[in-house]
Image (cartoon, rainbow over all chains, first blue to last red; front, side, top):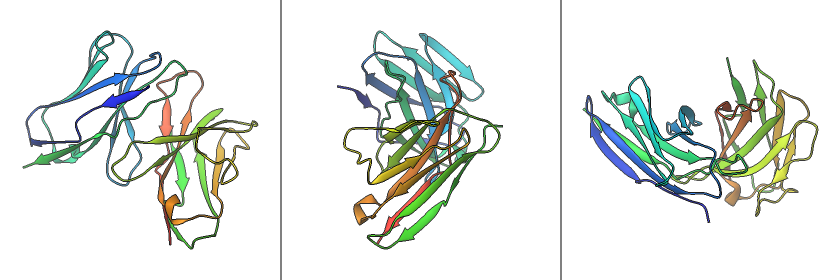
Length: 109
Length: 116
């Protein structure tokens, strides 16, 4: 079956760094997406990894290890507006996104 | 660019009535779009995939006669929840895929449906 595993909730301090881990099992693999979703809103695209390694994009970086079925999203210099849910979504062999329940990130001052 | 308009953003209806949700791409055209449903604190669940001019492909467990999808053009798709019941209360989100570029999946702002 297809499965996504990421922590339900994490708490971090403003200005700090946080890493949100995601492990996955899918039928085939065509890359992995990270989305940010604020409460009551639709997800917004953060990153897409299809090859192993680290992709850096401003304060956000995403890492992928295909052999381990593992990815993480790294958020630096945390701001209060980063409080949101972060969704890990690998794409299977049919190019369908498989959605996890997301990690709710709480930023404290 | 890549603006998707979805409305209504919030709707309350009585049990047994039908609700239509509209999803429109404002500055791009796309052939493939998706309808998702999300219950509180749960993941997005794909309901159906539709291509312009074709019948939608529904996921297992999603009743096609209950959730009517009309994808009449490259910029407009509608989801009608027929004979809504309280268990249909959920957050519904549309998403458009632009061409073959799999990164380019754009979401609407979502519709919160509450059925009394």
